[in-house]
Length: 141
Image (cartoon, rainbow, N blue to C red):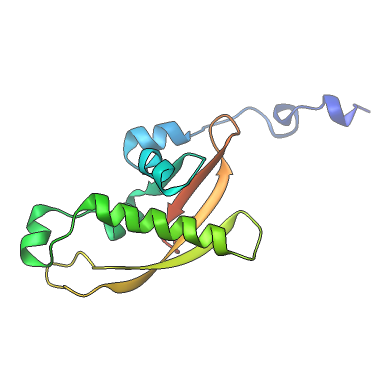
């Protein structure tokens, strides 16, 4: 009988068939790296938003400002990061997942009033096992 410490994952499960790294997801646009502004908001670990969360809560063009209300992407991103960091700091729960809410004007071509939206924050391992933060829509995994 083999020693459990000497048994590799590959020996148990077989070789890796396919893998998709966080770096590849950022390069492909599946994730949007926002670590630079996240550091300004207080995060110590790298932060990325899913493409869907970016489109729903951050993306904003000059055209959107003309037809809806004057805003910009950096301000909308700051709102997401500030509220995520605030949620972490004030949470009484421990764990790797947290839901938080913020108000944002929906990008729909006509709204001018902010509406509440809920996002999910997950802390997990990065490509080298380091802690990273991902912000997603609640229905994303």
